[in-house]
Length: 208
Image (cartoon, rainbow, N blue to C red; front, side, top):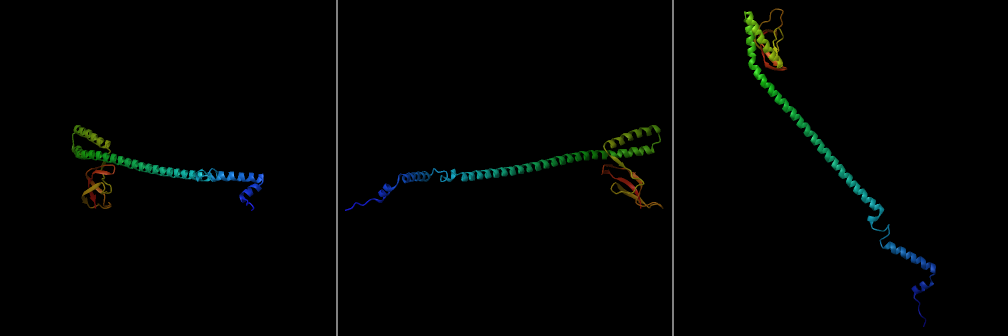
């Protein structure tokens, strides 16, 4: 009875030494690659392509965070500038309000002494004594200087066109021949103003 030969053993026996060496090299390469140590087949994290991918994502995330921080800083700066501008406007309005209140208070006091000037002018017009007249003139000059220092001007519109913004017509008379109506014929009481603000309207007679 003949003995059967193992095909594998027969193949090993029939292989040449060169073929055996080639098979060994092939086995080592397969073993190294299959163990997960190959740069190509190793985990995705160690792959150069996927590692660059991760760096790009981190860079994009940092850029987005930086852009958000810049936008937030710009928003805070805009709010700060608006607040500073509003505060500056408030400060200026407050200063102007206080100044106007101060000027109005002074105007009220000056308004009460304006009749003193009226009386001085009447006394000067009716005074016959030269020494007394000089004394009245001196006091009247001081009074006018006080008004001038306060920026107050007299309103004396005789022979001028009637302006209701500065005058109050308390009497009227027909205009003479050749004279246009609507002009101030006589000033009974002078008016006074500071700039465009009238402290006291002039009381006048107007032609009609």
